Length: 147
Image (cartoon, rainbow, N blue to C red):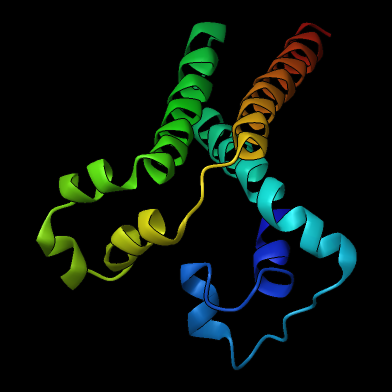
């Protein structure tokens, strides 16, 4: 919910895909602290949220939790690296992406995006935090089942 609220109210208009669709309905809030969060928070929240969703849907073991967090870590790092080496990544994007909703912005993501070390740190912390949360929940679940 925090990620959704952030995207709806704090992100500059036109950056996230769905915000463009909702820009007339949802006012954007810009303050000094939301401006500072704009870069790092999404880099943290993406691997964190998607890892927890993946774990919640399909994970029963520590090994599978590590694997899911690692997958989302690598996907996010790949997209971040793609912003640094945009020319290479743009050549890998098929032309037919431009005719599919949501995928149509893939090329712009790399062209307009900027590589940032802060994002790499956010991705790393988001992935590690998701794993830590999943482990804590797993331990509590095991304790409750034994009681």
